[in-house]
Image (tube, rainbow, N blue to C red; front, side, top):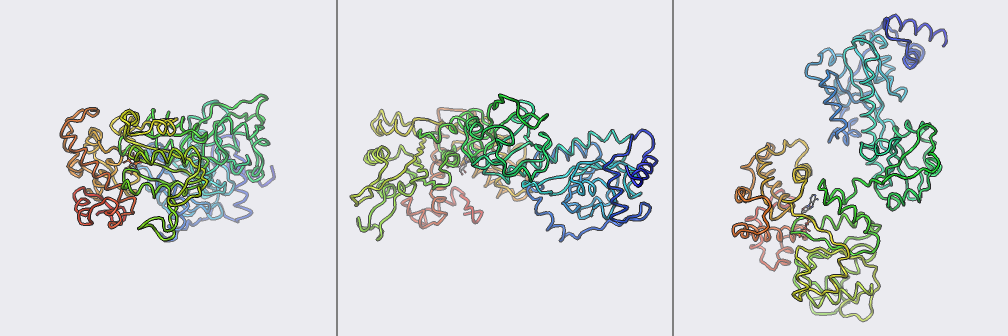
Length: 635
Ligand SMILES: Nc1ncnc2c1ncn2[C@@H]1O[C@H](COP(=O)(O)OP(=O)(O)OP(=O)(O)O)[C@@H](O)[C@H]1O
């Protein structure tokens, strides 16, 4: 310790009084910077400038992802801090407060002391302080009472942790401050809490930044990475090279500088072959997924004979479609295993249960996800057009054909995925042709002789019971077996176990961020309703409710009339009663309209032609069903 450090330590000892141990070297280092580098006077006044609202708005942008939709980490810290009388601050890397949350009973003095958004807390301006010193060192710190350089800050204790962006750069700092009471040691808990939150926020940004990489969650305790928020993360590219790692992981494995680790192979870093990681995770390279890996912090190297734990694949497109429904999550796991193994998948479920969403999720999970995903709804277009849509035709093949010919959906989807919705509605003659295409992997456009080679992956969906259609001779048995090696059954909405969560997620995606949501009475009405139109119906009911309620919470009276009938019916009825049958027919018409309108991007002329009705009739039906165009917010 230099003479200067010794003097500072003694000064701090006097300021802090007995019971506060030996002066913290981090604090001494900061004081030295204040005296030597910034030439601050401990007895002087240290102005705290404040940025204008306009300047602040620009600085807030990188925090939008965290503040716009605060995740559980920030929400929990906020709640815990405010309940315990702390003031929570978030600054950018330059020490400018971008968000400030004050406990209702916290001192107005704290606000005057520069807690308001726009206040600047650099060490160079204010001297040793939680935020400024944390940002200067990149280390978590508690600055307690007299450790503050500025005498005006003596009454306070500030615990601060640095916050890193998804690419590992310093984004800012997060701080909780309160009155200094008792001893500094009592602030350990606050520092731990703030550090944990910073880790979780970093993990949130890291996942977003490395959205298309293989993420490995590392833990030194089996199962922790699988169940917890998994802040110790490693991002690998398709060759198994390290492209990013979180601060929590650096700490866990006692690694040094992040920069020097980037580009290393995972083998060098964790002592595990990339192929083994992939085999353990059953993931393809560059697939977003989360693999739980058990690591050994003492040496930074894995123990001999290290074995991968059970993989955890979380938050992929299939899991998002499955929500929190246990049965669907099980099906998601099975689908993930099958999707790249040439196993044909048939998605079944009532109308509006999300068959197309599931098919899209299958495609997005597959190795073909960068190739086209082409859909054909066999029920939505006239039988006579299915053939040309599917197989395409050569130039001048028939009257009414496009001059230059048309590429069929089969050829267009080659290399990617062809999604055949409502396959049960495919005419028998075309079923035979489709079967040939699937078997031979080549297609002959109408009017052509030469077949075109295709690399075809077909996912089919139906709301009908195909085996019954086979029995009644309406569907070819051989095609049925060819397209349904794996059957996925999507439950009707009334049977989903995550109905409340689904309502919440849909509302979040449809409503503006500040919308107050549903009243409890409206929510229970939604929960009780049998939903013949399933998720599609739920979605349009929510859109309708939002439009009716405007900025206010959605009340039962904001819900469409259908929601007020049939509520007395039990929620899970398999035999429809007549009134429900009528409602079902209405909903089927509504769904068909919605689907065709969406397909034709709400171009009325095209949609009316596809439906075989006049534009005026279509307009009447749109009004009757109160269909809302996504562009106009109303039809
Ligand atoms: N898991 C989900 N989360 C959120 N929205 C969903 C989900 N599944 C379906 N939806 C929404 O519900 C509507 C209907 O979905 P989709 O078209 O996939 O159903 P479908 O079963 O294919 O319907 P149909 O049988 O009429 O073709 C769409 O607007 C879709 O965005």
